[in-house]
Image 1 (cartoon, rainbow, N blue to C red):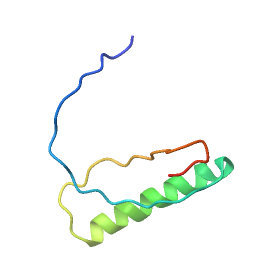
Image 2 (image 1 turned 135 degrees about the horizontal axis):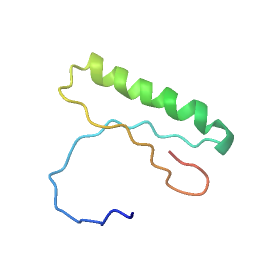
Image 3 (image 1 turned 90 degrees about the horizontal axis):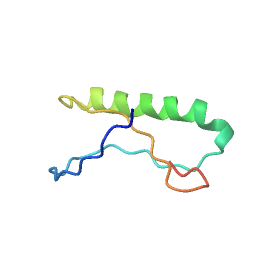
Image 4 (image 1 turned 45 degrees about the vertical axis):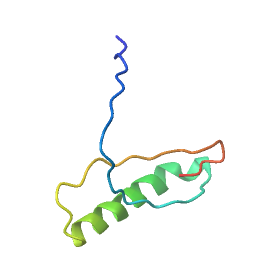
Length: 64
């Protein structure tokens, strides 16, 4: 069953980002590696309650 879409205003949030362009064949290796790097940064920076990890594909060239 489809989940209804709900639009809401939310306050801005700081995010940690690793930007790269990778081949489709490398996604299964690169995405977990970068997620680990972001979590490690959050841990060593002492960030409270870090949020979710998200991979955003910006275009057909797999710009993460």
